[in-house]
Image (cartoon, rainbow, N blue to C red; front, side, top):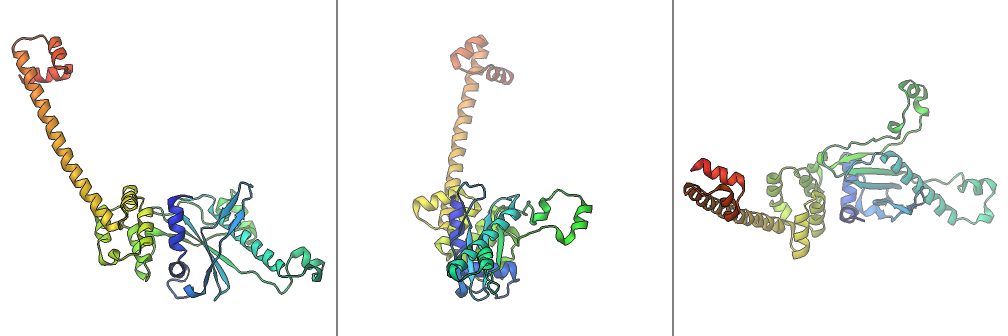
Length: 308
């Protein structure tokens, strides 16, 4: 599991953040999902390819609405995302059916109950899986299962509602309305939306709201900004994101000064060498001999000859 997976799952699994994210994406900011009603569920489903298990990023049960909310964090488009979301949701319903069956005495179930593993009065919790795209710009993949089907427009029209389909709600970090967020999701999304403008990002990270962020929020921002030097400095020196950024900027400034001095010394040595070659040429020395004595190139000799 990568650094982004770990940081993202822990950050968005916080009930306050998760509730707000669902409300912003699904309910236009209305206070529908409430943190106190959320229960996190750890889920790992068997892979259809039998190559291990597939784990959801975050899955929450909303006891107030009797709805399951899933969240998948993506930094690049997965072109099979509709099928992947469908498989996750189907596996979750299968898990619910199994849990219902465990609560029953199989000897008391008739043939139909055993076959379906449900009774007529049983019900399942709906699952709404949201995909949060944390890469830059817009999501480039499909959003509906039917978009993956290669059939003619005529066939689509004939099948109409009979065509199997499945989709998912999508949020793109660069276009989330961060202003309506009340938790530190506001700072997180503001930072994501400044990632391509270093000056604007640096100014943003030094505002009052950013100076009081929780450590987990700083880490999530640093990780998804994909600033490896920033992350390394925070980790090695145990300092906050703003301080690490300031020190990196100062290091870069000092490095620039050192580089300037180094280039100045090199330029001075080159000019000194050119003057020596020029004098040797004026004394009538052979060019091949000059190259051997001064360890210079033919181009340097010709350049000195042109300036003599």
